Length: 66
Image (spheres, rainbow, N blue to C red):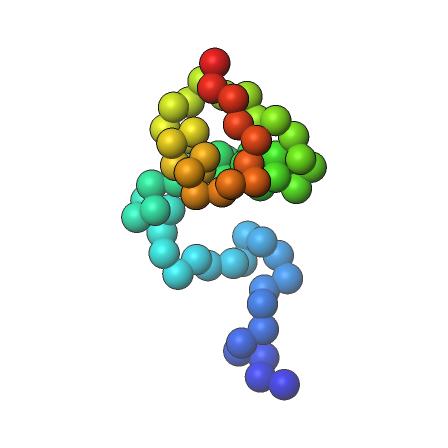
């Protein structure tokens, strides 16, 4: 078993290949969207940027902009 390729146990030790600044996605927004998809919730937001970025990219995301 190659231990250098093992996934870190704790999320704090994970390192992304692409920084969030490059993706222009806030980590908190990503967590909120992931939870909405996982639980099949309707995500209600007033953030037009969030709706624009995630709404088009993830068809199973139920999203309402107020």
